Image 1 (cartoon, rainbow, N blue to C red):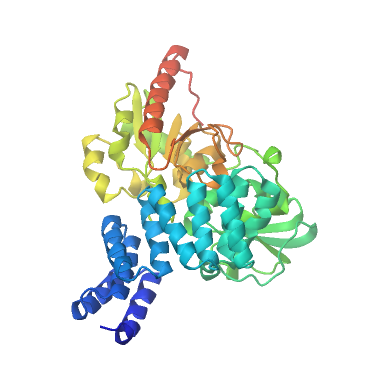
Image 2: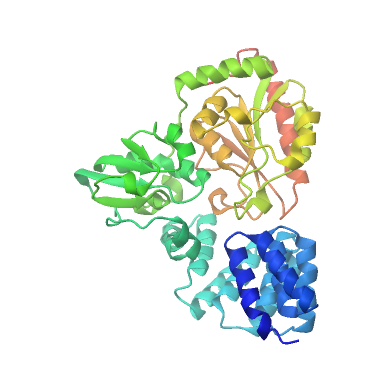
Length: 467
């Protein structure tokens, strides 16, 4: 049966999944397939939808079924590439990406997708070649510029990388999510007696990483207003140079210029050797710190080594499939003698509840209402262990010893093949040897924790000075 009569309904299902309404989109596709079983267009779209719901095996089956009927459709190969990528099957993902490019060699999106798989595989030369081919197809393709930015920044080529990173504001997800500034973009020029507005433009972790630049920006203007999300205000309002903190650009008042927070490294021309590290630049409120000292004494005791633990990030983050772990994978940490684990999760994932209870952990999430509270809790810890999440950035910015589990290929900010980071001097990185392989870094981390506790005991009861 021809797909033409079903196209309006399939287009509506596509619109729904793009709007984050995957369950409704799935129902729409299933209704079409009930009327026209095996329709390849509906089968492929259903594969796309369930992939967004992380039902990867089902998505692969659906896409391969559609491709078997119509192998000439390049977009279906491109979508299969992503499903296989999410499954850490990079050889097969590369083959699917190459087939999409073979079928439509002038498509910048497909060539950029090929570059991502090469970068995932650590094949930087091939990755650069593919992304430059993408830009040859479409010099204005934002996602290709961003892929290039991430590769350049990860390799430490900051000068070129920051310039490419500015292309994020031409990407549709950014355009849709961010307000439109009403004043000129700031280029770093002095603004004596004039106000500058700086707005967070990405995730919580990015804001904490780049908040180090706020005092530098404030030194060049007559006043600085910061725009950020409500959970950040109790923490970021304490950053040196912030005169006012609001949650909406429309509340910023009169100002002469505007800058996105993550653009400040570009404005200040940051190189690998000139990353500012005025640690700590994020600090806890003293009253809340005192509250958490008493709370932790009551909950987990004052003896032993207090270790904060964050094993899962925001599930809506596009990289969460790489970075988050089941709590069960870190069970061995709780068995280290002398360790007192404190969960730093604001939400305990449902899938982790049984392990959480079996380990006898204390659920502090009702008290972790904003990042001011999280910072105050962290200030009473000896060590923070986290996946690549906002908690890791917060601990690093506070100067607290932090151990971060890093997926492969790592986000650009962790560079490549390093166990330290120039962004946070008190942080240690535990990296996957390859995509999806957590066993080795977790084993190293557990052994490191044994050593840490042993060293603390050898140094005596006052060896660890909490904030």
